[in-house]
Length: 432
Image (tube, rainbow, N blue to C red; front, side, top):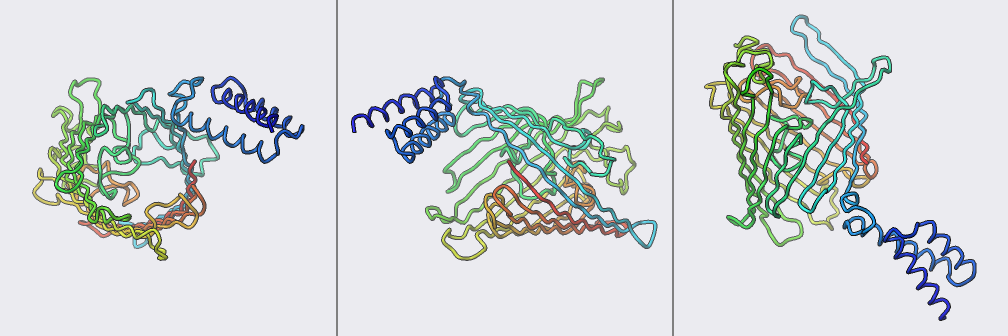
């Protein structure tokens, strides 16, 4: 008995050495193998020691407490995804009785890394496929003679958290996914757009029987080598988050926010080809180079109501929600509003496990001068304004981190000749 106890203690010291980096995992495996061969330990006891050591090392690395490895190295996280897409697109032609049909195979790859260089700091950077001139797409279309494709810098940011309720970020980042701007649809912002500039987020808990939040910042839209004044966008957002039956395991959540955008650019660039406020959607009543409407004060609002069913429910539907967005441009007297509304149900998220699913439907109507037309979802009528349409999305989890997405758009112009367009996308998504 004492012999076995001594062997276990010796193995424990070796394990401690491994967690501190003084010995290798191979050395411990060899020691345990010898002890098993001599009958000091059983194979089951040896396996238990191995598992416990691995768990301890993992805990130390997660907490950044492994003294032999720099703490920031232990916080490094690598993530990415690959998406395979089949897309068919059909649009009525303005010059003939028929229309155009386009079928495409597309692929997307994104790879990112995050780390914590200090207690209050976090940095991230990522690469993605796509074109450097298209901020709204990371797709590569198959069929160029198997030529090589490019990887571009998709984002690079640094975040500072001076206190638990305040966060600040700068660089190139996705404001929605990083929680520096909140909205519910892609009516105004394509999900692939990573804004460039700086933002701040402030949480104000326990106010007006809910939790308030504030977002704000400045984004650079274009930079001129010959003009000191560059085009930019200020924004500010205030919102509330209510748990309508607080204290229960699955609350009914209500969230809403109002946003103010102030777009600014120098008058000398008003008609320049590089001016980001040039309308690009057919101009309707404007010439190609006329930045008549400056979008100097755009007002937007978003709201979402979600009910999560009790975890023990046998219903295949675990969540039900309704949502909507609204935008208005006071600089213009007509054709200056947009709105979107929709519903979703199924599981709260898809991809964590096989069998998870979610269905979402939304209707969008965005008038010509409600919003700058280089930012909306590029899959909805090529991303222009003066558009209305339906979208239905079904996501199904095939396995952990593997999902199938089916997305259908039916869109048309609001004013002018009716030229309806249909797009169907089938995506296989792999996350790692």
